[in-house]
Length: 150
Image 1 (tube, rainbow, N blue to C red):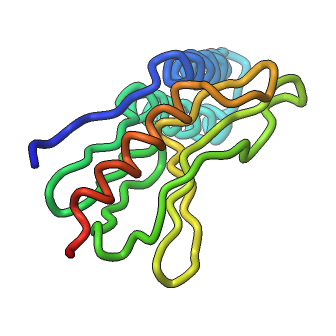
Image 2 (cartoon, rainbow, N blue to C red; image 1 turned 180 degrees about the vertical axis):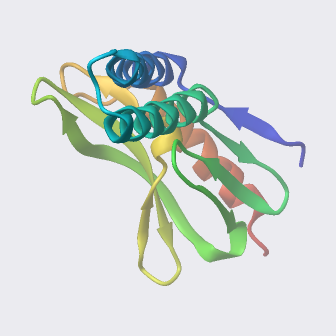
């Protein structure tokens, strides 16, 4: 099986821009001449952390290969073997700013634990299925079935 990379650029762009704006806000606070040295250092560190998360948001993805899935998220990365996956479904997992839902592939492990595949989440204004995340979940489930031992 060849590796396939799954991304949802619209959500990655929104999160990247949001964190970049946050980094700029805190960097501006650190640059104020009236701020104390401690405040400048603290605000500079927060700005740097926001910048790091912004870069990671821009690179969010899931890589599906012969061994399983590798999830590259804004804060953590995770690898899950195909043998440890019972099913891959999709569902609305959260609501951003109480205006629209976020649909996400949900990886159901053989242990019963559920892992939200946040790197490929997509916004759903109407709350309906048919988003990029739903399509990715269906493709990943098909790949899981073909990779499962007989």
